[in-house]
Length: 308
Image 1 (cartoon, rainbow, N blue to C red):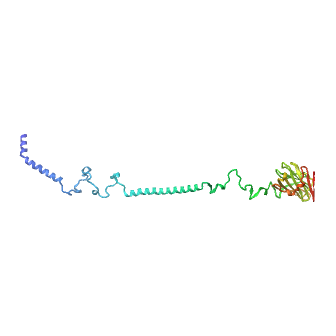
Image 2: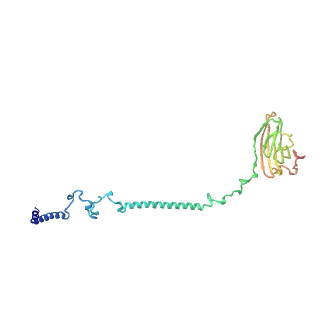
Image 3: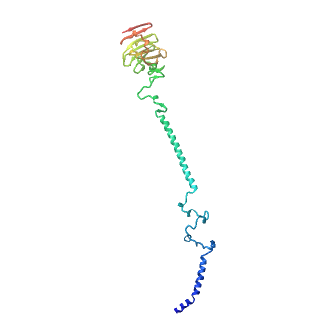
């Protein structure tokens, strides 16, 4: 049987060869297509895959404009687009603007520092010579409007003020100045007796005036009274008091009145003027008639005598 098959093949060799050539010619013709003879209609859907495309065969010219979108692009392979460059420059411009502002601010700060440095040796623009150091005395500090303290009166003065209303017959305080003295009075129905008591701590010269008709000048020791307390004056009395050596002078002026005629009571108004000064009020006293302690001078009318 195999002998027959071999004989058949040898006898039909030419025929089989012609058959293979015919078949091969058709296949050759199928892969050797004319240029531009295959279009989109001749391609089966999804027939062309990535493996069927030669490397670098598809370039920009083969791709339709705007057909490739963001998800299909490798961003790192792209350069900077013009708008991005402009945005980057805008950021730089902002930074540059901030830098300019920073420079201006720095210049302003430097200007302020320079101004402060120029005024560093002043206080509110005033040079140090416009101030006094501590424990130093300011010029004219012991004056008021250029006047020395001796030009002013001092003390607890009550000018034309009601200081007492009473019917007491015994001597009692009417008006006083602490550290100097006190004026005392005894109210009578027809007359008023006055005296002065020294509370200064040292001796005093006292001049007593009663309506210009009675004047008494004496040296009064501390805690002592003027000696003549019998003289009366219904209209009041004035005592001029000076410390030892006439260093300080004080004037007590007491006005008195017996209310309701002779029925009383006695009404007093007073003023105290105290002045610190040397010799103030000394003109009212004759130094030649200056009494010693325990002595007094009495003037009645135009007659003055020393009593001791």
